[in-house]
Amino acid sequence: MYGKDWLGEFTSEFDEDYYTDVSEKEEFPEKFWQSLGERSKFGLLVSKKNGGSGISFTEFVKNILDMSSKVGTLTYYFVAQNLSAKLFDDYGTQKLKSFLPEVMTGKSKVNLALAEEQSGADALSIRTRATPAENGDYEISGEKYCVTNGKNADYLMVAARTSDSGEKKSHGLTVFVITRKQPDRIKFKELKKMGLNFLPLYSISFDRIIIDRESILGEPDRAWSMLSKTFAADRLALSAMFIGMGNMALSRALDYARKRVVFGREIGANQGIQFPLSKAYVELSASRAYLEHSARMVDGGGIESNRDLPMGVYYHAVRASSSAIDASLQTLGASGYLSGMVEKLFRDIRYYRMGPISEQLALVSIAEKTLGLPGVRE
Ligand SMILES: Cc1cc2nc3c(=O)[nH]c(=O)nc-3n(C[C@H](O)[C@H](O)[C@H](O)COP(=O)(O)OP(=O)(O)OC[C@H]3O[C@@H](n4cnc5c(N)ncnc54)[C@H](O)[C@@H]3O)c2cc1C
Image (cartoon, rainbow, N blue to C red; front, top):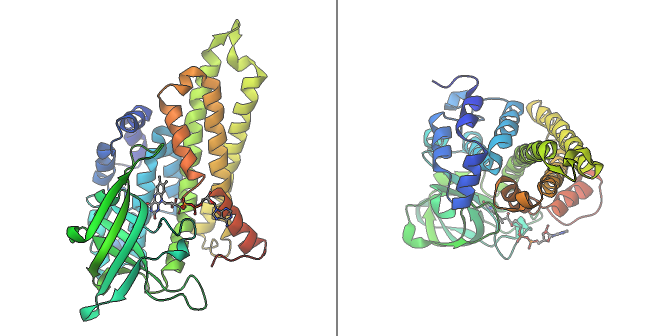
């Protein structure tokens, strides 16, 4: 039913008006989600043997670039669910792999609950703890902060400390996949925010949740290495989304600059308008080249020894996109400031300069791991 050009067909149905509309109404983009699910587009990176499409990372990135230039930040859901499905495929027990059909078709939503209020950007300092209980089970208690989808997630990948860190701070972390089957022991509180209005955000507290060993994702005590690999892919995939968002804003500004006549001529005839838009184009193109080079390294297996690449690409892309969206807003004047697509992109992109990796911590990582400067993180 859905052929090779699925994305062209998809983005004719879900375009910038849809993005603006769900953001304005502060709704989860249910139709968008269901349509991706019906096409099994949440299993693109899952191996064919487990029912996925098994496409290359480069192709995945291309999908994200195309999708995000039409529906902007809504692409986040496409990125996050595909990467979660890949985690289940690569690291899941038999039990977790059995959830893959519902995850790949979007019947179940999966989200990561890592951050905690007190630990902030220092994720290795989380305090949620899982202790051994009867019959080989674990008991988990703790609090998570700013979890996307939170209450609406069917499966939460919860990072917890299972042992003290020992010689390396990154040791002793385990990821458990928690379902909503113990509702009296999980409490959610919705958090208000400045953008990403189609994306509900929650703080969550867990009170002695019982979970079996089959619900552990990856190796107990060694979750950091699994998460770091996923984060590298996540940085690159999100960078593709930032570039698409930047291009979406830029194309709106170009249309306006060509047509809008003030002081008797098109505003696009003024270098004060041209230069920021030309710079935005160059920076977004440079980001894209940096990203595509890195995506090919992922497919070729070379990213492991080049871990600075995802950080560098992320840093460059989020800045290029932010500048492009800002230049677009400036070009559009009052009409850009009024509620609409560019104003929404402007508020959405601001978060990504702080998380999931902040600009500062991307640079800290490059300083420590690539430039060999002293550090304290892991
Ligand atoms: C919209 C949104 C969605 C989110 N979704 C999720 C989710 O799904 N799952 C999840 O687990 N978490 C999620 N988070 C949480 C997010 O990952 C955290 O915000 C992030 O971990 C950073 O923590 P913090 O904001 O408390 O920053 P803080 O740790 O308080 O840091 C504050 C500032 O100080 C800077 N800083 C800290 N240390 C250094 C240093 N050594 N050098 C220089 N600068 C430094 C930081 O970069 C930041 O700019 C989300 C947050 C938001 C706002």
